[in-house]
Image 1 (cartoon, rainbow, N blue to C red):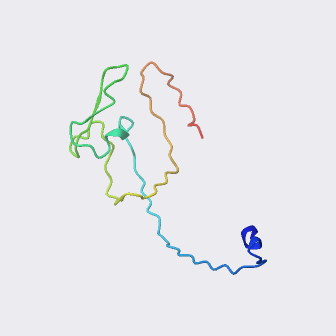
Image 2: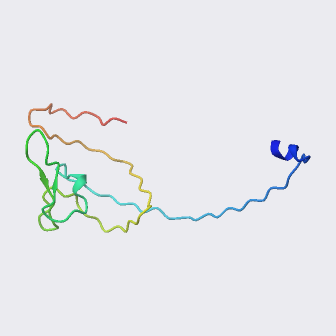
Image 3: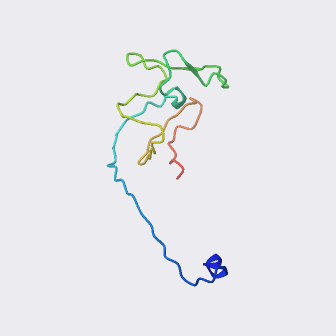
Length: 108
């Protein structure tokens, strides 16, 4: 309104439109193996992930018959620009045999 006052106007008409699109949520309950490497998602068989690590043991992408360290594929259409929300994520994984064996709660 400050600019309108410069022009000698004290009121102005405002018009607005809103377009709303409702999209139903898609719920997927999926167990994920602790050895899965998310960087291998969708990668071709024998792709290498985490090749530089302290143990010098890279992860390899597999296929449906031998997934190796690939995450489990799920049949879910995802398109560019899709927003993904993850909730109710729980579980523990121990990568180092010398680490503590007592599970600790996940950080929130």
